[in-house]
Image 1 (tube, rainbow, N blue to C red):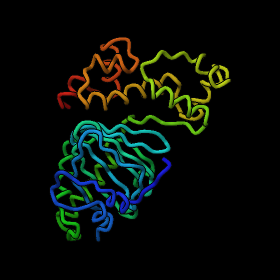
Image 2: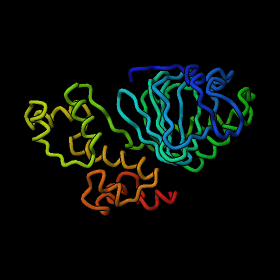
Image 3: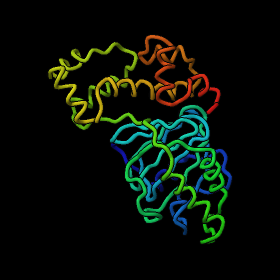
Length: 277
């Protein structure tokens, strides 16, 4: 996260939206006279937003495709049908896999007390999805107390009630552990032996296990399984087969990958690929 841009920089960096319910920009939403505003935008596979921050919090929903949101605290994978909450002023980058239809709700810091203060991925119910889509057609200067205002407030109600999903790959602050995790992410299919990893950073196997628990709040095995699974989602979105994804992400077989996928996301990869919920 070496370079940080504000939203104005992003607008000047020549990206465009392919389709929109109402033509507006991020800057329009940031400067909206109301506390909540929404934006519709579509992005092609491979598009990348460099690190930046916004003056308002964001609820970023993927109607299709997969987004990966990266910050200094880790990566959040956002498949279709889910959304990521990004608090006000949080530095982050976004990469798109598959053609992504994105709908973003911008929320002023004082819109409501008790909004989440950390990045998290949520399940988006059909009801919340339709409210978000409807919000992109609401004028920025909607009437307070009117129907459009109630739609916007309803989104925050549903945000508070939505199930939270473990679609986050946390990253450590310890430089030795950070380097190790980056190596594993770069080569997710390789064989992994904890004792060898520990020797590589000159600590004992037990010390390395404690470091994972202390820094990341989970065991090494839990982190590795989550990392491999979440890295697989962009590959699936890009059209890779279940067999190919399983082999490239360290699974012994497609059935082992499918079992882990279902335990984490509650759906089989084949159903995920076909868009069934």
